[in-house]
Image 1 (cartoon, rainbow, N blue to C red):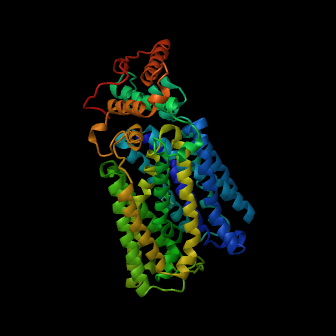
Image 2 (cartoon, rainbow, N blue to C red; image 1 turned 90 degrees about the horizontal axis):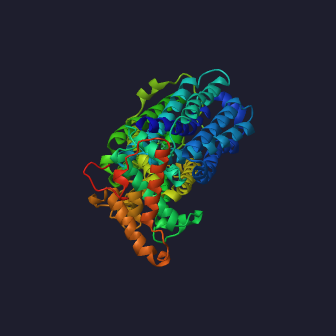
Image 3 (tube, protein in one colour; image 1 turned 135 degrees about the horizontal axis):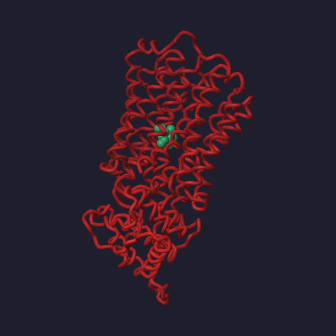
Length: 551
Ligand code: BGC
């Protein structure tokens, strides 16, 4: 399963690469001559990717419900290939802009589909780790794009930018063809009534492939209960996402939007997009040296994400977000103070002139204050990378009931891209207008975010998506260790049914329990038709009895 998740995370690599590659290209002479006529064309080249991503994220929700998560990832990758080909072959500004828009659509798609898919195939105790693989891949994509730009910046002619633009087709084709062999999300299969396939997929994902395995059947039962409940008693419309009602969906969507907006309000993309400018304003001389420092920035981002892959399911989401926000806030504050007292205030635009003969060695001749700025910018990136980077994507993917998950994630991801866009536009005037005040603003945002998470965000670590659903419906407590069993989830669902729906549905002959019983029987019958040995003992009573080895 780690393999499947890591493979899908190539989508994250494409996301990171597409975001990172342009910053170096903008500094290349041939690229500037062909595509940058004025400030407007430059701004457009940067921002249309995010505008495309905003739209791509929004339409991917309904698409993922309709044709499935796996097939949507395949389509998103095909769109990415189209965008890459157009950008690589671009001959004028409008062609490059069209390529960037199409690339943006695909990045919007992949940025919500990959965590969605990962969250739905993951066992609850590894879900954080698997989604962190996506963030890890994003950081690798950004770093690789920085270093490739660094390597080709002095090449003659258009190959300096066509090579970095085109090389990403290799991972894109690997993802496109590889995804064909990946399983469907079992939760999506069940929502579509394809129960036996879902059971087989769960068995495959759990490693041993046995349909009779007790853990496999318990996971199946838990998801089925939740899906049946939703289909019988809840509305399936898009607007349910914004209704409060018994499920408190409005609160969930606000939490998801907040975590994604907060991720951008850390200021991370000031460090990602404008690190070269910041280093120059702090005294690093020469384009190549600044790009080199940028590459190091990318490496720090990658390395600091690694501990989270191993520990996020131990640390929990809340402590990681809170500590990340506090440490980011502290780094930003120190940057503000150092730049206020020692910074250069005249070179903070993105227009770095190409200077011959300055390489990474010139970094050795920097001033003390410059070193402090570099260290704290890197430290800031590291603090972000272990916390808001991964958890910014993990948390929203865990919040919603099955029928709304994809659509809601589309909305939260779109919010992320909107703020990504806003910050990429606001950062240059802020850096050149209020200089060190920029860092102070982000420091304050980070401080407020720590407080908001402390006050408002429930913990989701170690719970199944179905249990989290019940926590928001008020039937389970987020700090109750005893909830980790489908039996408890079933009891909570039954309780919800009694409390909220008994009056309305009292005349129905088929109770919720019977509906689940019926669904399970159909799976057994289908299995028997296919001559499959299906030992359904743990499912017979609809809810298996608790055992200490549950997952
Ligand atoms: C964010 C991007 C950011 C990247 C940096 C991602 O999680 O969504 O906006 O550039 O992290 O690593």
